[in-house]
Amino acid sequence: MAGFCWQPGADLATLRLRADLLARIRAFFAARGVLEVETPALSAAAISDPHLASFAVCYTGPGPRHGQTLYLPTSPEFPMKRLLAAGSGCIYQIARVFRDGEAGRLHNPEFTLLEWYRVGFDHHRLMDEVADLATELLAGRVSLAEPERLSYRAAFQRDLGLDPHRATVAELAASAERFEVSIPPGMPTDKTDPWLDLLLTHRIEPRLGAGRLTFLYDYPASQAALARLRPGDPPVGERFELYLNGIELANGFHELGDVVEQRRRFEEENAARRALGLSIMPVDDNLLAALAAGLPDCAGVALGFDRLAMLAAEKKSLAEVLAFPFDRA
Amino acid sequence: MATYSTNEFKSGLKIMMDGDPYAIVENEFVKPGKGQAFNRVKVRNLKTGRVIERTFKSGDSVEGADVTDVELQYLYNDGEYWHFMDQQSYEQLTADAAAVGDAAKWLKEEAICQVTLWNGVPLSVAAPNFVIVTIVETDPGVRGDTSGGGGKPATLETGAVVRVPLFVQNGEVIKVDTRTGEYVSRVKE
Image 1 (cartoon, rainbow over the protein chains, first blue to last red):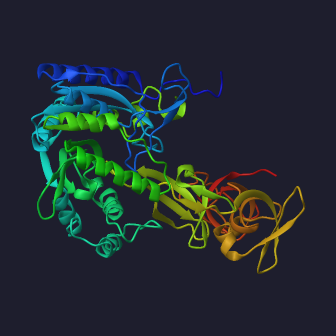
Image 2: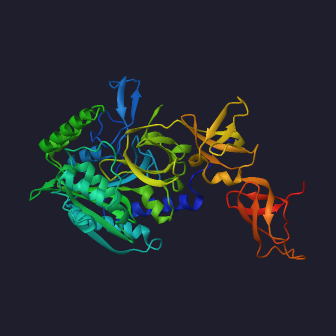
Image 3: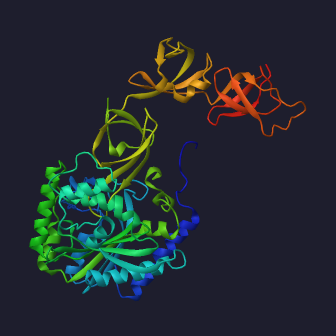
């Protein structure tokens, strides 16, 4: 019928490439003794991060959850940590995840995350493994120089000449003006994080990972998310992000295992949601109970599989590597 | 006027910024791994044509601009203003030199033009892509030269000057592409 966009967004060669990458990922982890797992896509709890929006669906029964709102995962992190606390050992998952409000050249509201956890690793050791996997998957397709590691502070010092851990809102605003970054209306005057995000996305990210895997690591404590804090002056979140050719590919943590700290962060996030007029998310009490029972010391990372496929296929948008991108799903 | 959330941003959307109407040329959603998402847009000022970059926090709203494109018939110029007519309602609208801009040199009476209105007032005028016009002044060509190579300037009845092949003569009617300002062909009347 005319007017219907029934054809796939990705060509057949790209779909074959995706299948090949998935097979190689499974072989990579099988060789390293990492167990493949699957966790639910429907949960009564949801992430409270104010910058992530979960899709909600309604379960009509039967059973105790009759008439309950359930949430689709923005990542499989919480149930995977419950497996770790239950003694699973190292695990990985190739998960379909969902994020409302995210669509664009590099965003599709549903996408595939490769997420894995390594017991006994810290974030630096996990960065080594991420580099090994990415290098192996991109070999012969993308020529890569040696991987590079850059602390969050070093990146800001290099590109903007300021210390992100100490700069004030006024200093960050002045830097945005000096580097001709358009300042959005309504930027807060009492929080530096949105200003750091503005400078990072506009001035630093586009140049990260030029022809090489670049890891940005040790984030401001306020951006630690689910990473543990390393005491110091200032303390930093043991978190990293991977970039290639200006595109963010992965986010990892030396995982926070402290249940008290985790509960405090959830409460802070929900307070921030309330202040922004966003709905309060039901906290994952199962995760907190698992942390209380004991999460083994581990590091975990989530890698955007579609973006990796896009770079491997030398495409410019996610729509070209998805069988059916959102606008024709 | 309606307001638009950044979620509604797409190329062509007309928005108000700093008191001027703008059209979105390009919209890119950018988000750090964790944290604040932004919409990075390229916007064209509909008064000046200048393209600038702007960033909005994703989820914020912007006032829409009451900008519409209409087809109007050009009537005449009174020395200061250009007068147009809506062929359905017979309503007449006047455009000033800033709105008519470069289109002025292509406007021939009765031509149908695309006029962009802002709050009902002409903001810009686009000449038809092709116009049929009479040459009012050009040097006599070299007899026998039909190659068209080189060419010569010719002044048109509307005031524009275009390069025409040497064989084209004074008083002839030609077709011109107004987007490039180039001669297309002679037109037999």
